[in-house]
Length: 531
Image (cartoon, rainbow, N blue to C red; front, top):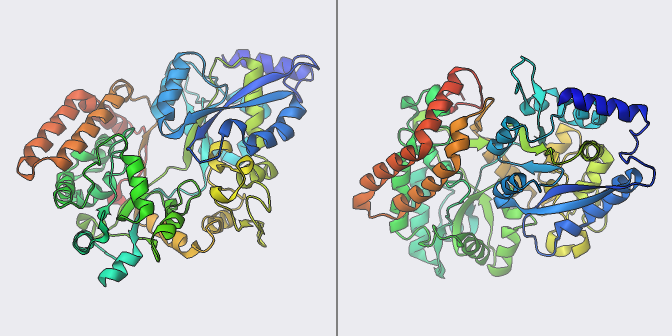
């Protein structure tokens, strides 16, 4: 495939087609590009300002008609998998599902990108850099040379875990911010007893994230893991099964206790619990939640501004109480690898469309184009620029006309986060868009990068994860629902039976393959014991 593509690209150069992918002067082609839909009210990602901007500045000069294809953000992996299997996927796709990408490589269902990148991606290569590009390389054919199969988006900030508490509730209770699990639990109990939100008081916002049920939960249970009994090899072997690490059981027992004291919602396991949680957060019923570091102030779900509308003085602030005593009191936070989502070009895209896809990505990597696609229009999406050229007075989605609503990362997806091509500016920009809450955001990012370990990935195919990964996650969802809500007297049996059920569903095979990959040196990530 690589040699064939090299010949095609050489012919294109000889024919003088590098300025346009059209075969004839009057011919246009269509490039279908995947974009995420986060259900931002008034934003139609298939007909948004960013699409019109890209069409005018990239599509029209190159005779390429751009079409944005909308996939729901939280089910994108399943939707893309279905589209790939049905041979109707967009020409340019992105996903956070690393297993799906590896499957595409194994089945040779995507373009091998070296020649495309070298011929049409000079700006993109400079933006991503060799180290980051290496995340998308593998020696698929076994000839000892790694090829570029996907493009990793560049993460501007690697922070992932944010924990938030109601400052106004702490003041009402005359309590300091909790600094360990005991004082945090006392806060939850005191808030419930005081009925700080009346009969609707629910101190801990909690639910099951169906695509990866233990994704959020391990933020709490990792505090109970006994790292004196966990080797580095074990850490990587149980990469997808943190519920099986020594000590984690007590973390789930703690959640079970909170549930039976009425500190967690009894609807936490229901499919529509996310909407109920959103309502509870903005109405002021909750006293704690955990999401990404800037989540309370984001324009898609601005819990802080919405809370203020309903509760006078309502205020979310960062909190960092989940200490692991076996690590000397470290408050573990998982952080992203430098590689963000994965960008692929399915083989259903012909060579001319594949060239168009690479040229579009390269256009996106040019600073002025990225700035526009990420920030919008001065006076509409933001008030102006500071001395560093960073927008200030960034408007929330509610304050922007529908035709100008945007979500930067889902459209300008080669960059996971706002990028100003300078590390100092990038860091300064993290809090700047959140006018009036800059210090809150800075504090949250500081907490989220405290004792942070890089998430685990593997540089070889884990067949068992491909075969059993989705089944294991489904079983973990059942396990979480059961161990949190079961009768405390039955907890040990429910927990042990649930672990065995997960192991029987394919987790044991995954653990064995992960262990082998670790011992073969085919892994990336950080062991908290090394921090």
